[in-house]
Image (cartoon, rainbow, N blue to C red; front, side, top):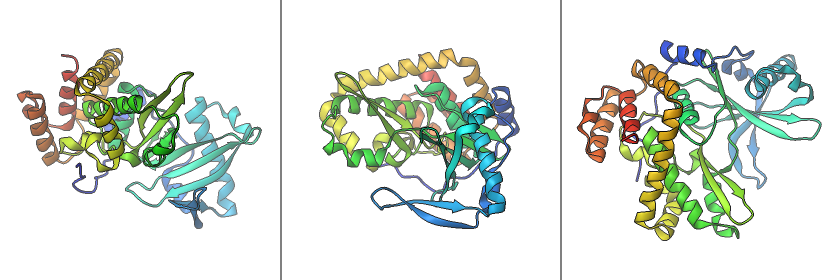
Length: 339
């Protein structure tokens, strides 16, 4: 069973990471920042459709502040979704701003609605954490998923990643008449491998969503991470393997029931081959990310020592023992797939 050893530290964005963000147009001037949203005057608990407390609170602002705040968050949405084309704001309004009251970062979630057709979307405004930014960028470069995010100073803007929350998906699994257990188990194996190779930790069921796509014959699944602040941070190898979290036991049991060891190894090889292809196609960007990370401090050194020792044993590769920081460990982990 995987256990997080202690509360995750928050790391400021370094000058090297800032240069990377500017170079690849992730650093964008935005009209409102995280701390300005803290000026709310009241809040109420937010309940879901079954009257369960979501642990989010809807916040309210004084009339004098609300109009300006709503205008500015619409501008952020235009930057995030339309490359800064402000004309998209004409038919949008801010339906709700929620604050997450648990966890380290306490993000704000903005619900934007198109008044023409009532279609809605979300995005998040958070305190920028270097670990999370590295995680988002590596997800964009190395996974099958594209990620849209922006940074300005100490504020991070993230798009909403659509899907069924992992814990909710597993609770409803037995009631799904279209369940394809083999495809689902295969996707979990591939997700497990992606997280391990790129050292994304803490992927228990609350930190990923399941994107379900019905096809004319079968149902397809894609598991997507939604929380990236445990990128290359923990020292325990098991933290980077979703298979070791008890919250994921239902998916693990499906794999044990429907997938043979030979099939599992094949799926792992397939995923590593896909990561290798993405590594080659985005080599310049990945090299720039790793260079920024190598000059950054994103984990305590005792975590670096523990992880390099565990990965050295796992891969039977003593080169890991020479790694001086998390970036060097990650670089060597990625090089394993190129061999």
